[in-house]
Image (cartoon, rainbow, N blue to C red):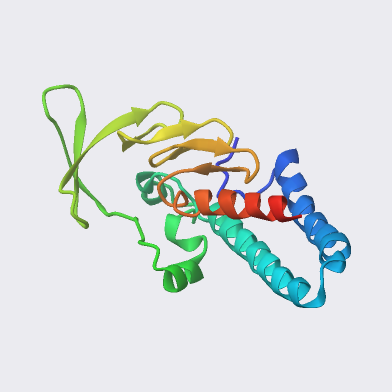
Length: 190
């Protein structure tokens, strides 16, 4: 099974497609039933607030889905163009997302405990413990875990979200709780 780049790559899950259909349905329900029954001033104010919430839900959902949470070591070891920084470059300038692509030197040594240490040339970390992923057949960071749905190791793996159809890891985690909270407020308002 090939590695999935992000949540926008096929195959799409049923829960993800239902999310794509549910937000426009909630918007139509709000505009036709809720907003129409309010006084004009309240209707304008609440409709603008609801529309802003829906736009925020779409934006945070896109960012949480489009950013690839794959372990940076895999993106440097694979030459298939699946690097962590080429998924959504516009997000880095707009939202100041730190690029966590690290360069790995060729010096590897064993610390005596059976774990490999790899020298990292950039960032504040000078040495980081690694482990071997037998599925990816590569060294990955000790905090990474392999996702069986995406078929890749994810840095700081939290869980695989069926609603977004992607793994939640260190790169997209800042947007995941925001998306969940804003999407919840959209469903509560309508």
